[in-house]
Length: 84
Image 1 (cartoon, rainbow, N blue to C red):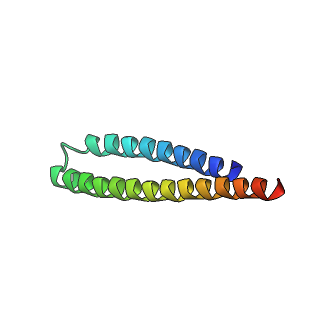
Image 2: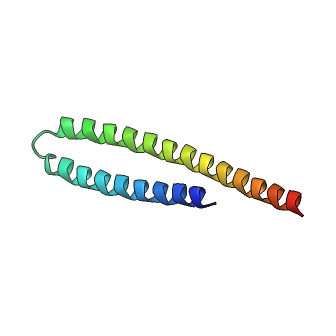
């Protein structure tokens, strides 16, 4: 179970770091708004794509971690059953 717990913790940390970097980048791009609105619009579209891809990736990783946890629990239960 420890490995799965580490995986979920790792995913939480990664999501937090992504969110912070995303907000920082959005602020930087917002500062350019008056200078080149077309570039800012294109940058925001790319950021939306990055965000969507990251969300899908983390969702898939979370599904893998959940399935791994289920396998660990069922393996532990089977091991306990065999020993008794």
